[in-house]
Length: 92
Image 1 (cartoon, rainbow, N blue to C red):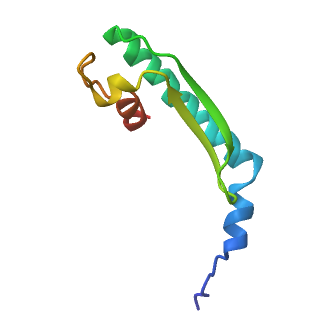
Image 2 (image 1 turned 30 degrees about the horizontal axis):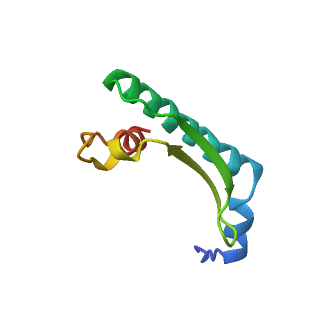
């Protein structure tokens, strides 16, 4: 007979804050950063990228990739829309 499994909020919180989960978030973020750097270089776009790891307000861990060239992401009168960060995230 199958038993019903219930997962509590505390279980999810404890699992999300393990060192292995935090490390894997960093691995994926660095993969996105490397892809963004590659796309920017291939398209001749000047952009510095970096990863910041931390905890969101509340309790959820996060690893975020930032870039200093927002114009290429959204487009402007000076820069075509290239979506380098978006494409990098989709490819990772």
